[in-house]
Image 1 (cartoon, helix red, strand yellow):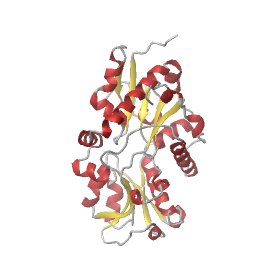
Image 2 (cartoon, rainbow, N blue to C red):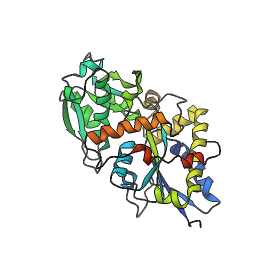
Image 3 (cartoon, rainbow, N blue to C red):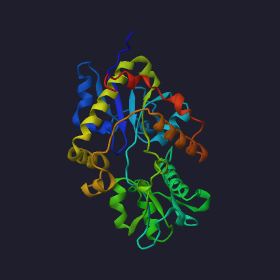
Image 4 (cartoon, rainbow, N blue to C red):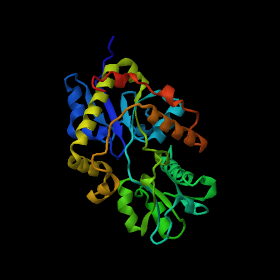
Length: 323
């Protein structure tokens, strides 16, 4: 028996996502309109729906395309979610240093003061990102986090992305800051910072495993159990959006500017035109996510282990005709 469904929700991070493209084009609402199913975004202020649902995934009718730190954290706490897709989208990950510092190689991070932000939120994915980014850079030189000095930087509530860390760098309180994305590309010059280590340029993509690489698409188990065809159709729209994005780089740049809050310069610096937004559950991406799970667990971010292979459900993607 088909369970009645009048609303489905989606949420995405302010980064390149197929969900963001599909929402901008009106394709998600259009897909389900004839079924009488309303499609709503958590990014719009929705009365009665806590914003932290973006991280906890406690809403059973929710599709989430966002960072893997909150997704793994929610699963580790027992939330009944399933992993139904993964993307890999390069987002200009870098270690920034003060201009003229002469730091250009991973081995030069040894003994330096590395900024590690602290945000007073349920799951501090910003802190996890910094630790993972520095870990990726140090590992290229056979080093680990213990070979550097980790300096806590308290983030001000409501402050801009990376602002506390970059201010600490400019003040000489730290020697290096991990950043990623368009807003970071815009913020760096304001603080006299330059790219010391371009993680995107490293040949080993494992150096770039972080909150957004790979980025999961998750859904609540209840929705998957009760309305599997809705889940498959939702993924079909995302695949359509990814196909469309590949041939419309100028439109994608406009959408990314709106999604990230960055200007054209920041978007151009952070994202390669024509980069694929396609999702899959390939063995390589699952292995990279499992690598991230082990790192996060080792750093104390997860309450219990997450078996990435068991978490993944390939059925919805297999149910999309052209997947």
